[in-house]
Length: 169
Image (cartoon, rainbow, N blue to C red; front, side, top):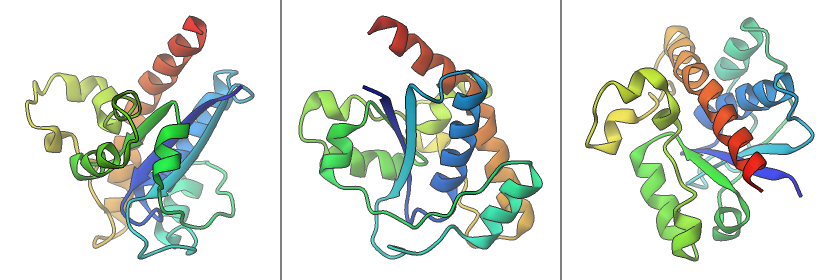
């Protein structure tokens, strides 16, 4: 059975699809593509069925990533139960996922995406919201680049975390 990772943001058209694409690429590069499935979802239904934001797709393509055809998905409690690791983009998303978790074990699988960023660890943060991935939605091209950079900064440690989890199985 494949290890299942889900990245989560609000509408599932910007941050979480960027993270989904980056992680899928990193797992493939690490030789884990056949053992790890990555998808994404949103905590709200406002963008349900919409494609990835064109600005997010542009930034990914400019960075050399392949952008798949996909539509926004709203996270369900079943998604929370079925995933091995849930990576919310903000503390607010994390709280929402934890309330959707059908058990304490499912809630424990929720880890803020940036909590894996080695440079974020040096912040010595007590408040989860200090680790929020910035929302580029209201910004311009540079904001989408900044989001991609935050996502890429944590991706390597996420791959190593999942590799360790797979080895422990």
